[in-house]
Length: 199
Image (cartoon, rainbow, N blue to C red):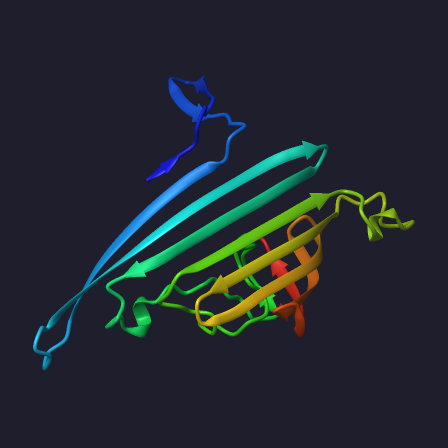
């Protein structure tokens, strides 16, 4: 289920088009799974996953925006849950990406953060035309924008993982490049550089 309170609309050509809201969007997901395993006394194993998410994108000035997303969830009947039904966080470790993910962790390996327990994650991105390098001569007259990101993840059997990043976007109108640093329980873990194409 998805719901945005006090959603505004406009009518164009007889179609109803969303026109934004001052409230965030709420999402509630219930996933019920049934796995069949031969050789077990009860060959049908059931599980349930419940996930709640809140997100908002807000323009805060000319070419500036603030985006955040909070997601939490838990499993029921997870004692026999196979690995492929774990909750797999969006990890993107490759140095070259083709899409701009707003809920990704850029440094950990694929599936290294997956969990079958209670979990939570938070993502925040602030975009502005002038922050640091855009104040330098030669860059100040370009259309590039600067971004600061913060991501956090916590689950029962994982340490708290935090990731911060700085990027420059709209490079040649479709590219983004930046650097991210990862921390386990606020202790330095890794550093990585990414190039992103928004196709």
